[in-house]
Length: 164
Picture 1 (cartoon, rainbow, N blue to C red):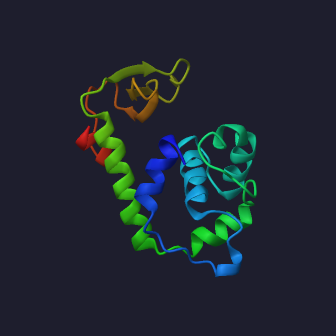
Picture 2 (picture 1 turned 90 degrees about the vertical axis):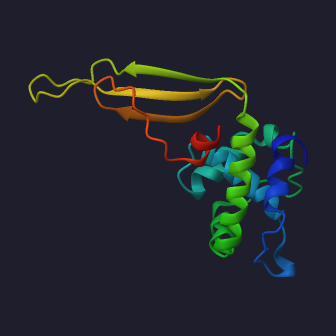
């Protein structure tokens, strides 16, 4: 494993694999890497994760072996539903903390926009105002949210926002 997959492997190495020894057609850490990547890119369910991974299989193979290809959405769902949630949460916190620390002393751009045509004069509703935090070096949107009428207030709720 290379690149970000190696970081995921380090953070998730202590996750207990819930499968029987005979049921290891897919590497657990590879499945976690695929799922995290798909989720960051907008996947909302196991079918989305499988579809995303199959569409990006060449990209994934730059970082992980995928000896048996992409696991099915049923396999992903079954394995993830049997993971120890405490172990997984601990690993997720470690991964997010690693990511947040990698943003330290890096540029984070803040941009506000008004969504054109989102107003409703008849109902007296003003247009939608959004604020986006963008990590310039990693080219990743950290947070995007709507705000009240051109407010410059951004609530700090995530560990990334607090530690970056």
